[in-house]
Image 1 (tube, rainbow, N blue to C red):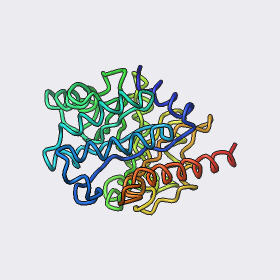
Image 2 (image 1 turned 60 degrees about the vertical axis):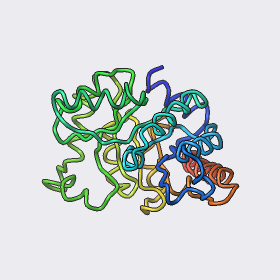
Image 3 (image 1 turned 90 degrees about the vertical axis):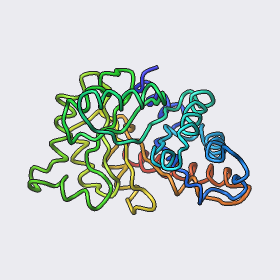
Image 4 (image 1 turned 90 degrees about the horizontal axis):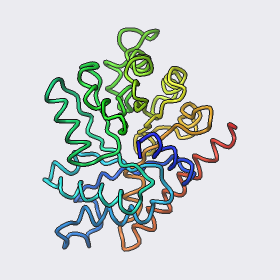
Length: 274
């Protein structure tokens, strides 16, 4: 099944716009996993089992795995999502961007080695750096547009408030890059006004929205700015607020409770806007 159908089914079937970020730090997961040779996978597995009926996606940040040489546990985690949460897509957050054969290898990494359903990509090098990803027409490609970090303003607001780079990226994504109808944009919850501008330019494109929780993004403003005409179209990511909701034996139950709470808050905002 192609990514666009997967995410639509997950939005509809789970009545959820929540994406759980599986970004586990070995120093922060419950201590009783330390005896396992696959502690990260076992931790992810418990989170997936506890939340798979409450989410629209899982996002796995590759750095949390490759920094410790745990790519095998990243792969197993994605495989587990495909086996036990078949209706929920796995997004590999790798933010790759390069040209030529290197870009082709990055696309192969995401879609062949890890079999991710979607990937994040850096558009700074233009279409030739994105095309190897975009040509996988059954996969999703989330292009960085207006990121949630404060330093993003140094480039993304350039050259002027009336014509910032992030709006140029949104226009180009809509007009030129989405030839396989598989492009989404990354737009941070920390900038809801910019998020609303982006949505106006890409009315049907899925938006991956980080920045809720620890980064300080406002949930109500972000949901209101990001939803499409059908009351869907957004993927609200939460990582630390969900996976570290508990530290004891009941950590998975607390992660489920945090996911349910976020889902219900998002849905409450959407209901008031319809």
